[in-house]
Length: 142
Image 1: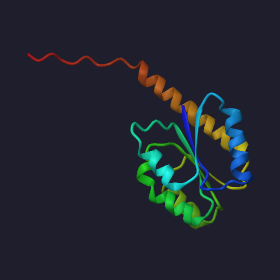
Image 2: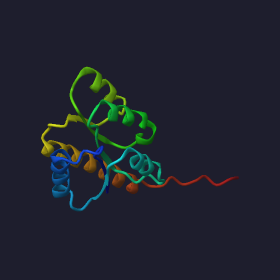
Image 3: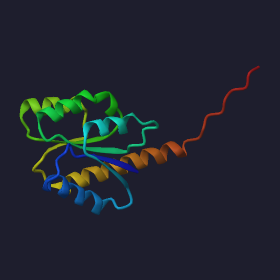
């Protein structure tokens, strides 16, 4: 399983606390730390897209707008979006990314880690079910 964590350049206790929770709870998961938007865009452009979940921190309204501008690259990736506040405009912009969970910079990181755990469990079950489905036989031409 692969998780990307985009910190948006936030290097203080916010990203350190979140990183600590994720690494403690998901020692078996590959975690990719991404600090800049160009690096995030480059990573999302790589094929095949092997990202099982993304945790994105938007430290301010400008970063959130830039993330919304990358909506096509984030399509199909379950997201946890961490926004600066719960203002109406902020939540409206954030909703354009169709995140599985939205919280603020002062949220409890244990809750974020629990939501991430559920996302990964769902992805794992879906992948397992897809592997166990029989392949339909192709009809032979007459």
